[in-house]
Length: 112
Length: 113
Image 1 (tube, rainbow over the protein chains, first blue to last red):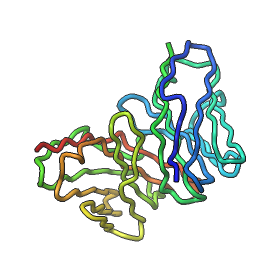
Image 2 (image 1 turned 135 degrees about the vertical axis):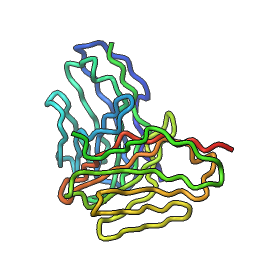
Image 3 (image 1 turned 180 degrees about the vertical axis):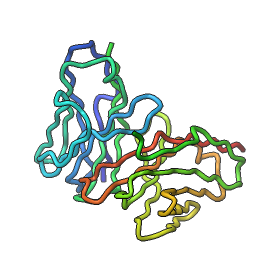
């Protein structure tokens, strides 16, 4: 059984660019959530996908968007990057409504 | 407006003693609470959870206590081990929130040999 894996692990982008982060969910999990963790803060919920549909969204602007694929892997896309988007982006997978989510190691995004 | 608060940024404990990590919340709709542990360069790892219908849940060296009237929960680690040194996050979820976990800022625990 494989765990949650995220790619890339580190990324540097320029302000105004677009970025795509990827996540492979744990085997058997059909729900993926994305979180943003700024330095010194706890993870903050961006959105959740269940069976390829967005199933809930936190307080993030529309330039944060996502996809979930039939194999339950997921992408997080951020357009028009801003300096404040610099953070650790965490993906978590779970099965259905179970709240015990399993996290990946995260992607560290730096916007310069 | 922080709904989940961990007011102690850090805690230092001697090996073998008890570690007590605290968490306060403001939203009375929260009905499920979790603790996660995070090592540097790794994602958070689930530790233990508790439903609002209980006031205590135990798993080995880890016990979580929930005081609903005070909107307070705590994680007890007994005995503490150097490998427990990590950042501990308290998280909460409200019924019907579609799995949206609200996290505190974390408490960095250092267990000294």
